[in-house]
Structures are given as C-alpha cells and as structure tokens.
Length: 106
Image 1: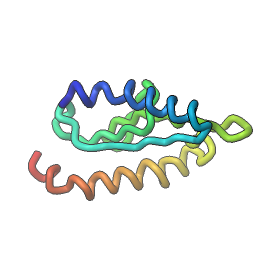
Image 2 (image 1 turned 180 degrees about the vertical axis):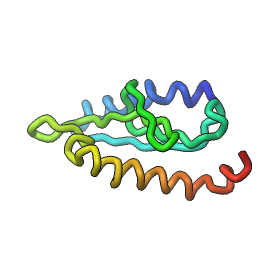
Image 3 (image 1 turned 135 degrees about the horizontal axis):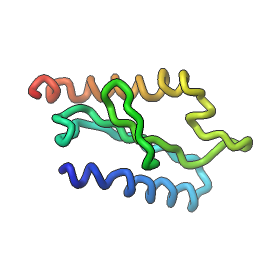
Image 4 (image 1 turned 45 degrees about the horizontal axis):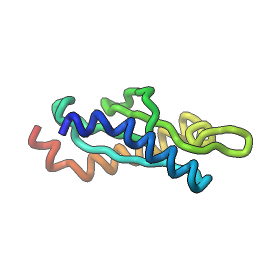
C-alpha cells in the first residue's frame, strides 16, 4: 500500500494535467486517508505538484491545474488564509470524521 500511496503524486499530476489540457477546465483533485508509512497519520493529497508542505501533521501535496485570466492559481485566488480555512481545514476535518474509528485503533 505504501508504494501505491507514494506513486499518487506523479499519477495525479498526469491525470490532472491531462484533464486540464483536454478540456481547458480548472482541475482540483483532493484525496486523503491513513498512511501506513506515517504510522497511520492522515495524509491529504490535493491535486498534485511534487512540492510538499506540512499542516497539522498532514502531508499536503498541492497544486491546481488552471489559473484565472490574471494568472492566479486557485490557492492564490483564495489567499493563504482563505485556502487554509476553507479548503485544507474543512477537508482535514472531513478526513478525521471519516477515519475516526480507524484512528482510535492506532
């Protein structure tokens, strides 16, 4: 499972970029769950670039495919505080609610 999880950034990057190229749509992919390599800590992957950031003990790999007409990414459009509050924190809370029984066992 660790190997599959470690391959996700490259896989999602290809998928996201392919969708954006084909449709000219904006693309954001979010997924997350317990990561065995991190002793079951929740990991969040958000549509992927290979740069990583840590946020509340979650590994965030983030990038969005597409920009506004003035060149801003989705994260830049929301601003750092808005992005963290509306996207990262909300998804983090959802993951904790989704995996709370699993998290109690580790």
